[in-house]
Image (cartoon, rainbow, N blue to C red; front, top):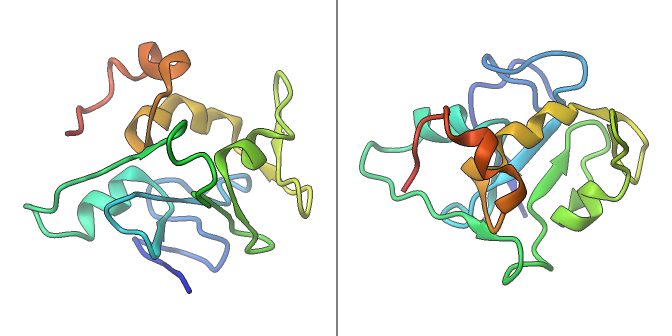
Length: 128
């Protein structure tokens, strides 16, 4: 069983930080295995200051469900989440709802082994 934590503003996993019509995913951190968070900021702001962030490794933890569709509540592995990726769109493989393709700019905050996206995260705050 899981819960969705953070500064939620609706039941489709939108939060105070990210709340466009396509901001409908929540992500799981390895340090909080039964919780999904709408964004990195929600994880930081709703945990204790000394909480050690541990990310999933997309290679070693390939079979872990790490993404939650806020619309249909389907839990997805990272590969399942990416399965409906095109150049300019991303959809839930279960309900075909649109996801925000811009989330890829923040993958380095959630997952290890995201070499393709590390360059984009250089301007983002560092995590341990």
